[in-house]
Image (cartoon, helix red, strand yellow):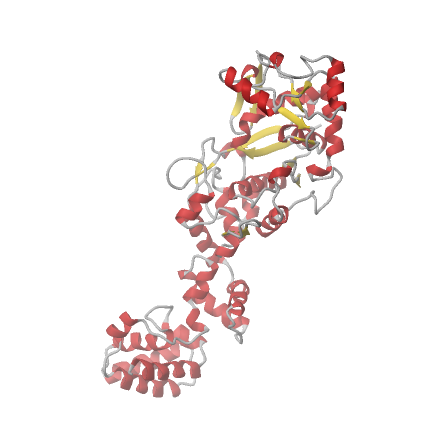
Length: 506
């Protein structure tokens, strides 16, 4: 019987969710939805020293903003909980005991000083079959001594016992068959008595098995640990339920070599986090895609194509299209350059496609935050529709169309010098009279009347129209002038021309 697809995204609450982690979550989500499966959010908080307050809430909010739906998790509940590893201590203790009882693991009492001395004495030291016989552990100590030390409260760790000289095969859906000889693996720590918590290696294997995870989709950086995880599945006797491994390509720096980092974003001016993050210790704020003015659907589309392609030239795809077309066969084995400029392009495309009424819903909170009120949703929507072609981010809509909501108090000096001649105040007074006589201010009608007046007077068309724009907008920019005056109340247009006459001519 074929297993139901169950995937998990398992971040650690040690800070904000990196955009690479977001892509991992996205691929898990897409694959689950494509196969009618379940998406699990598991919080890996076993590293108590690195826990950061607010990080878990941040993870949930980020995934929700991006539309990455969770079927089971701390918030959602489910039949396989708890979904927070710190709440699964009893489960891990039980499985540590299973490994010890079966001789698949052993207890080690080596102090940090003893380990450091071993590193100094033995070149390229690692704790394995060639060195464990010289260390302080349950393989070298009498059973009574081990029991005495544990009873006395001596700190210890539990290590997996890896037998050397055998090939360990990891079958990966992207990389194919990966074979590692066990002799190069060390006896990794699985459990620490100091905090009564497992390490990543044990906790993941136990949780993936008990939560019936069918596919482990994670970043390439975890590939070196995959052979150990295969050995753990074997040690527990769970080979029949071993998940299919998928190791995604790294996200690489836009410029140069290496893995994408926050420093790259700071240097080049793009976010590497989905939402703004305020460090609870330093108060430092790191920018996020949401607050920068990106649409979540654009971020999703952009990330999906970093390391995967649909097999054709299609670029703009909504989540349903991504789910339909996705396959690991079209995932790259090599890292994907993080082309942040392409992310801006995607956002522009999604802004252009979004209905103007929905853009108004995005802009109105920005207006209110600046104390700008009194404009209808319909007015804001029409204004957004006129400037979205010039906008890449949500904030650009307001920047490009600010004159729709606030009359200019200053005028671009370059445009004034070029467009505002000595006789322009007189011509603008005449224009006011023309506008006052127009009852139908629709774009086409007003344009015909004004252009006929300019031609009849013999005025220079470009000079008059640019001065008109300068008076209303504050600079020679913006959409078609008569589209602006169709939307803007005629009284407001005339008042702005009068203000320009009074201000520029001083």
